[in-house]
Image (tube, rainbow, N blue to C red; front, side):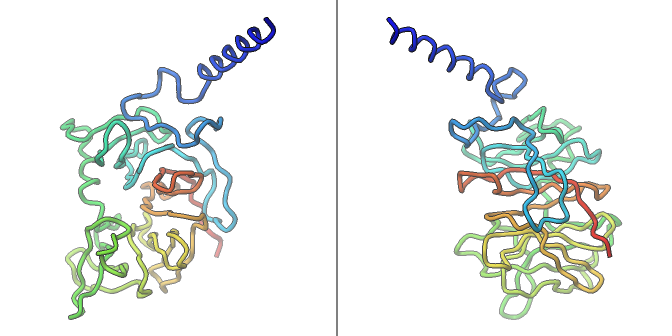
Length: 273
C-alpha cells in the first residue's frame, strides 16, 4: 500500500513539472519552435539573460533569444523591433526564413510569404553580403584573391566547407567598386563584416586566434583591431541596430549540441579613449 502511494505521488509531481515547464504555454508558436537541447534540466525560459564572459567588455545585458536549431543570418527590421533570421529546425530539415520580435516572441515562418510588410526580411536575406555603410558610400565584403591577384567575392557556406577557399579576408571599397583595399591579410577565415552605424568601424567573425570563431572590431581610421568575444566555439553573423546601441549575433555559448547555433542580442558599450 505504501509503495503504491509513493508511485501516485511521483506521477503527480511529474505532471506538475510538465505543466509548469518553460515553453509549454499556449503562447508559444508550436509549428516553428525548436525543442530545447538542455535535456531534462530545468532552465530559465526565453528570453534568457546570460552573464558576461571575461574579456567581453563591449557587451552588457546579453540575452539569448533562441534555444535549439541551426539559427543564422540575423538582421534587424527598419524599426529595430523585429529580427529576421534563417534556421533549420523542426518540422523542417531545410533552411527556412523566420521573423520574431526582439524579445523572441511572435515567431513566424516567412519562407514563400509575399506579405509586402515583410519585404525588408526577404531583401536582407538575399543581400547579406556585401554590407553597405549607412550613408551608402562604401561596401565591405569577405572574399579571396585568385592566383592572378584578382579579388573574388565569396558567397558559399560560412565557415567554408573543406573544399572551399583556405582563407577569406575582409575587403572595403567605394559603392561603385573603386578604391578596393584589403582590410585584413591574416590567412584566416574572416567573414560576415558589417559597418557600425557611424561608419567608423567594422565588426566581423574570424578564426584568427585558431580556437573557434570570435567577433573582432576593426577601426577604419588606423586599422586598429580588437577582439570582442572570448566564448568557446562559434561567434559570428553580427549586425548592429540602426542606432548602434545593440548588436545581434549568432553564438554557440551556452550550447550542449555542437550543431546548435543560437541568436543573442546585447547592449553595445563604447570603450573610453
